[in-house]
Image (cartoon, rainbow, N blue to C red; front, side):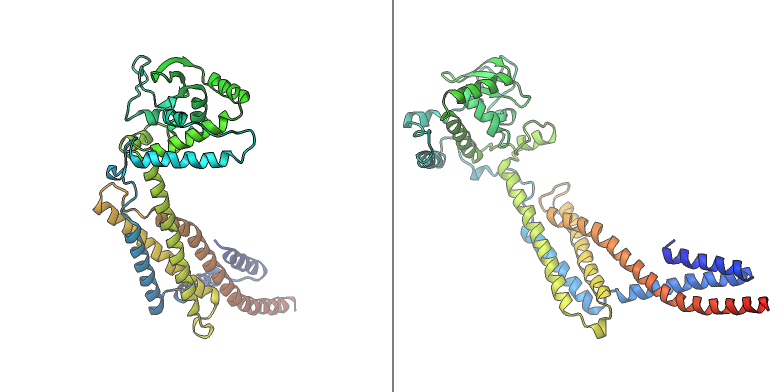
Length: 390
């Protein structure tokens, strides 16, 4: 029961307590209120309903959203295209390493206490990092292999690798995704005895303390290794997922890697951005057609605009979900994730606003109607009371 309903009911009850009105009179008053409320509600919905012009905007908005979905669809969740990837010793990878090292040489000359990076021989050696080792994996029952070691070592995680990979390079160790660590013999590139990860950190700090140039060199080696591994056939895991198991591990093993994830993030970003742009264009252009004489209250006209945008988003998102299912059952390649997100946001935001606007309109109309009715009945009550006193 709204505040205006409570107000009217209380007024009827108070009136009955002052003057003896029969129950039929009370029912008549309350029934009149219900009918009046239904009438005002119908008036609001008629005023905010979509007319022929508004329907044109609605169909245009739906068409634009569907075209956007078609243009930006089809790539979500797609796995590595190995024809676009290269091997570790490919000319493009070697060229990238040299380019990055040259950049480091130029930058290092401007930094105090940091000498020239490394000689050509050291640059060649730096391509080997301790967390690439897999020899002796079976001895320690680690399960490391050519296809799985990047998911199982924190040095290959684009996020955690900045810390753990750098420490491993400084200390010739490898840290696994369960945070256990092992020594690595860089001569024969084999895994040695287990070492506490805390000791790895302590040794890394000790190494840095003895020679401050080691940290930037190790960090740079880590970044170069990440950059070169990123474009190879098995790629790198999604940032931060190496410590997780289940679906994330399955995704990587099914060739969904960091580059695929970044591509999908860009796609969702584009989906979201273009959805918002279309909504704003519809809002602005529809607003240009407002005429106070023909359309009345601007708030009610704006409610029409909101309906057009909300309905177009719901229809476009619903059709996208259905189309995605029939084109690729249980797949996500064609899902308009950004648009669907905006649709849910608008449902949460717009529907309460519309209900609030409807309530405000109804309460205001009812109050104006009942104020006159109450004034007339109060005058009638006053006359009755005066007659009783006489």
